[in-house]
Amino acid sequence: MARPRTFDETAVLDAVAAQFRVHGFADTSTEQLCEAADVRRSSLYNAFTSKDELFVRALEHYAATMRGRQEVILTDASLTGAERLRKLVDAIVDEERAARSEGHAAGCMGVHTLMNPDLRARDERIARILDRDLHLRLGMLEGAIRAGRADGSIPEAPEAREGALLVNTLVSGIRVTARTGVPPEMPRRIVLDGLRSLLT
Image (cartoon, rainbow, N blue to C red; front, side, top):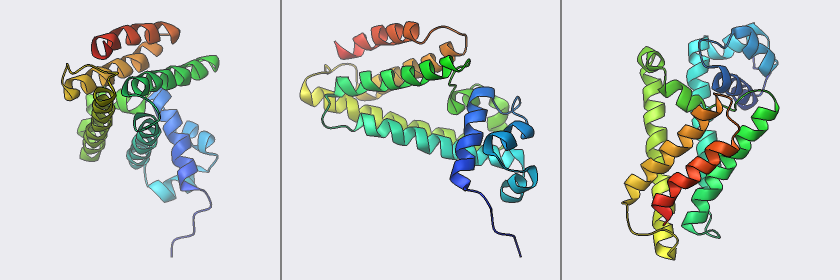
């Protein structure tokens, strides 16, 4: 009979995802994961069996958590469609600013994993998680763009899907640029300039 778990699985996934998003899979050691999650190695692997399995579970949890935070912003009916997109950018910049004060970029587990094709190849679940997450996030962005068209804050062109892809690309750019050590205020200005083609 398996022994009952002595830790909060959600808290563990939050902790290990925070490590993976900053350091990536290869550069995150088991010791780092155990320390971050405040659990023993045996407890961690009794629950998740391997670092690979833990990564998959953490990626799924991270994607759902981040998507949920973005959904709150992108479906906020008290904001115009354009305000929702700007607020999304500001939320990501604020996260990068907070991480920079701690000496590192916030990172993005999704972006980091997408940029490492070996990770997608090693487990088909990783590709499925990333593909589903992209599909759902683009759908939320399209919804905000359609709302902006309805309230007059976003013009009719380009098409909602094209606009969603533009916003997603710009947001990913913030994450990548932050890893180079550039202060987040600079990519924010660049991203807002990029959004002008959509919002005006």
